[in-house]
Length: 260
Image (cartoon, rainbow, N blue to C red; front, side, top):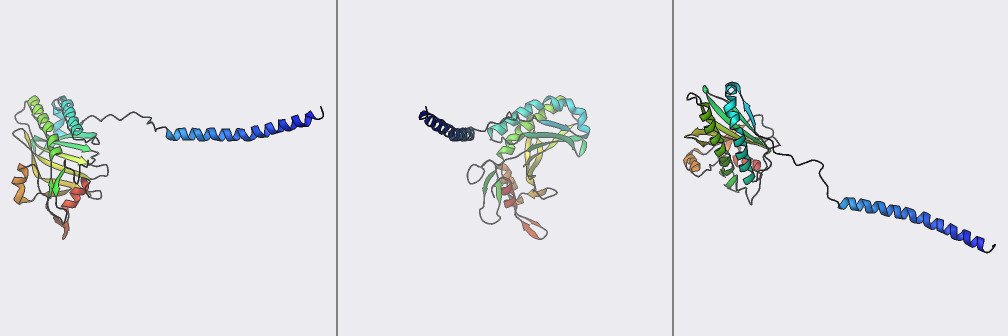
């Protein structure tokens, strides 16, 4: 009994030491494994994907009394615009507003479409949906391919025709339009034009607003090539002179479309 007691005591002490050392090691291993498994697990978003915001109609001044005809055709316009943006991969432009406001005389109205969160989509050396070609050196002409704008104008022109049919007031007309693309940074590009024979005609001018600018800068096309430019759906933008210095129209437009 005297011989076995020390042996049992030492064995028991060794067991305690072994268990005491092993337990923390196992615990730390478990923590490390949990951290590793958490790191490997993909991050799961807690929220659901945000649905596109519906087209918002804003009637100003005298346009308020024509609310019903404008609202009745709005859902179709919304669907057609969404389809255009989907086909042309413009998923970021999810906040679209349509403003109806007086234009000049009391019997004239204008349509103004604003699409926010514009995100340039690159498709090579330049964005073929927006910038067709430009001179790499100097401040030469920039040619804008207006395919995205033209696609958006088709449902807008159709919407105008249907609203006028519902209004059935020969004295009332909707003659002008403008489309604005805005970035989240505050930059924007605005195009404008008129409706002629039921079609939207683009004027050879754009309005550009930079981050720090308080107002838009009007950029007109080169007058010598307006007819040819409109015929092919593009127009050249010549440099401007502001306060005695030359303003690079080419650079500003390319920066907006992500081609610095």
